[in-house]
Structure formats: C-alpha cells, structure tokens
Length: 604
Image (tube, rainbow, N blue to C red):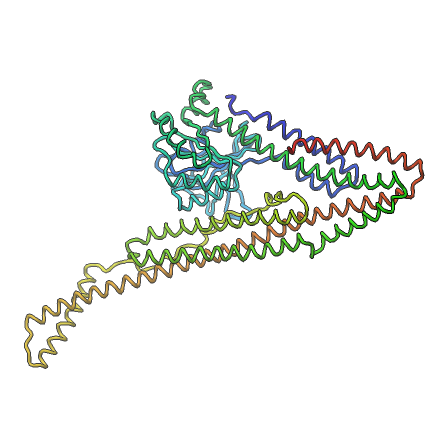
C-alpha cells in the first residue's frame, strides 16, 4: 500500500545537506586541511545512515506488539493473549528478512536466529530459553517506512509506575526521537499511565497517544474524549485512534478504504513526516553548522593573507595579530585553560553528587523496607517484598541516571561556553548506558528461614513449656507442704501458652532480621555495581568532551599557522604577484562565502 512511503521532504533535506558536505570535503582537500576533512567525514557518514528511534511503550496487553506489526504490515512481533512481551524488539530496515538476538555484553554481541524463532526470546514464558543473557532481539525487514533509518522499538509493558519494566521503558524513552504511548479503548487512562506519560514527556518531547482496539470497543470515541481531557495537563498530547487488525487485513487485501478506516494513515503520517522528517532536519542542521564553522576557519586564514597583500605596510600588524591569536589558541590547549578546569572540576563534582544521590536514595529505600518488615511477617509477605524491592531499586536507579544525564549535558554546555563553541553536540555521541539491567547482576539473597512452626512443632513447644511450668509449681507446692492438684495443671497450661507465644515472637523477630540483612546485602551489591558504572560513564564523558574540544583547538591552531605562513609570504611578493594572488583569494573567498551561506540556510 502507498502508506509506507518515506517523506520526500526528509529525503530532500538530507540530499541537500549531503551535497553541501561533499562540497566542503572537496574544499578541505583542495586547501590541504586533512584535520577538517576528518570531522566532515564523520558528519557525512551520519547523513548517509541516519537512525531515528521510535519507542512504543504502554501497559501490558494494550496492543503494542500488534501496533508494531500493523505499522510495518507484517506479523514480526509475537502476540499472545496470555503471555506478555518480556524483551524489547528492534525493527529496522534490511534488504532481506533476518533476526539477531542481542547478548548481554559490552558492546552487545549478536547471534543470528531464524525469524520464526523470535517468539522464543521475546515472550515471558520463553525469554532467554534458548540463549542465556539475551537482552533484546533485532529484526530487519524490507519496508519503505523503515528505509530512511527508522527503528521501531517494541518494549515490555510498563507494569505500573514502580515496576522494573517502567524504569526500563523510561530509559529507552530518554534515548528516543519519538514516543508512541499505547493504550486501548477498554477504559480511560489510569493514574499510573498518566504519571508515566508525564515522566516520559520530560525526556522525549515528541510523543503521541495511540488508542488501540477501536474495532473491538464501540464506545472508543467516548474513551478518546475522556483521555483528551486527562492529557490536557500533559501539553495537549495528540490522540490517534487505530485498529491494528483492520490495518493488517487492509494490507493483506490491498484495501485502501479499510486502511483509512483503521486509522493508520494518520499514524504513518506522524511517523514519516513529523518524526523522520524532524530527525532529518536536525541531522541536516548539525551538518550545516559543521560546514559553516569549517568555512569560517578557512576564510580566516585567507582574510589574513588578503589583508597583508592589500596593504604591505600593514603586514607587520597583521602578523602581530596572528601571533597574539596563536598564543590564545595555545592557551586553549593548555591544561590550565578555563574549559579544561571547568571540565575537570565539573566531572569531579558530578561524580561526588551522583554517588551521594545514589546512596541517599538507597538509604531511604532501606529505611522504608525496614518499616514495612517491622509491621509484617516476612513468612507472609516476602515474595511481594522481593518484587517491590526490585521495582523500587530500578525506579531509584533511573532517577539517579536521569540526574547524571541532565547534569552531564549541563556540564557540556558550560565547557562549550568557555571554549566559545556551540556545545552539546558531543553529548549525543557519548554512550550513557541503561542502568536498569545492571540491577539484575545483584540478586536478593532470600536464604531466609521463612517457614512458620507447624502444628506438631507448636504442640511440642506448648507441651514443653506447660510441663516445665507445672513441674516447677508442683515442686514449690510440695516444698511448702501444699498439694496443688488440678491447679498445677492449669498453671502448666498457662505457662505452655505463654512459652508458645514467646517462641513465635522469637522466630518472627529472627525472620525479620534475616529479611533486613537480605535487603541490605542486595542494596549494597546494587550500590557497588552502580557506583562503578556511573564513574566509568563519567570518565568516558570526560574523555570524549576533552578529545572533542582538544580537536577543535588543534583545528584552530592549524588555521592560524597557515594564516601566519601566508601573511609572512605575502610580504615577500612582488607587486604583480600580489595582484595575481589577490584575484585568486577573492575568487576563493567568494566560493567559500557561497558555500557558507548555503550551509547556513539549512541550519535555520
């Protein structure tokens, strides 16, 4: 069907940006600027293979996998009425259908599997059944909708605000270009869904709410209107009603009217134009900004030479200015440069703050767990406590991760300001790992004696206490010359009951202490793993920011050195040579100016 077509505007934007970058690459080669050419080569590769991530999120059994299948027009994500999706599925373009499992390694190792075996790894009952340590599945399909670099990510259900899946989905959303929040027409949005949406919009501003199963619920329009009212507080999030079943039937039959009735043309338009087109515009703008900066550097060296040629008497002043600029550039490369100090101090402060924040969160969690254990017997609530603990730890890790992410971006902006360059670009290349799977490396040690006393054991404890109590009082009565008789038996029963109650209390206290220790061991292990990971991440950010800005300083130094050499040679030229060279420089500067203006046009 014609719905799966890539937006021509996006293709045109990327094509114009690629042509401009190619012109800039030829200019770098002609002007012997291999250093600038290296930066543009990386930009060119990004334009040649743009990647746009659309993350599909929502509660369990809302129709997320069916929605992905309907978008690409084939059943690629397994759908099951009883079993939910447990691992993310990445659907992207490929010339032939294929599938790979992603293994939990750094970087992720891939193993090819038949497409018809995807179900074995994705669904809960079989997840990880064939290969241990599987973290996801990537499927490639020959679909036009995906050919522009679109990657559709089907995630597990969020499972409520505090679940592990919710934290994982929020992390995926923070790295997405757009978000499809899926909810069915069975009922209006719940409080946990609205809270999840609010958090998701903070990390991904481009989002749409997809109302599924409109063919199954005749009152879907009322649910849509109710949801629209709930979403007004979330920034007027658009709602697109769809039926995945109708869409798949329309694709199979080539029925355009049925496709329109399914509601998917509006969703495909949102995906292809607003998302893919917007991502193409951003990539083109970044490429244009790089070309503008490179043109300005080359122009600066030519302007200095032209000034020296046009007025030989002013050549000495031009060379003095260039010598002063050389000192400033060298200062930029020095360890004492302000941007270097800002980077070093910022990373140190951020490392301390992230560590303190994580420890504070874990401490509050442990206190909350202690209070809960104090009120309940672990023998009755331990399974629920384990699930709650893992979900809360994942939630706190995500909050700590978001703090690291936001503060790292802010630090990049500060460093860029001191370097007098537009900052933030390098952060998009920094790999900040998803922290939630790391929590899986620590397991709750539940080697706790949870069994309560059975009836036989209770009877033995009561009998032992009763016998001991009766014997003690009978002996005392005998020594005093008093025959207690039946009274002694009654005393024995009272003592037996008291002994049983104290034994139960002792065992409950013991179970509570074991539960507290298990929780502390788990939290200590999580803290140990996460502290190492966050410090590694910050060191990686520091190196990449340092290398990025050091590279810019080297480029400036090279431009200044070429300008200084050209100005020095200009003073030695004859009048005829100066006039000829001035004409050449004017022509070169005109070409650079035109290139810079074309690049600036795609930035705005």
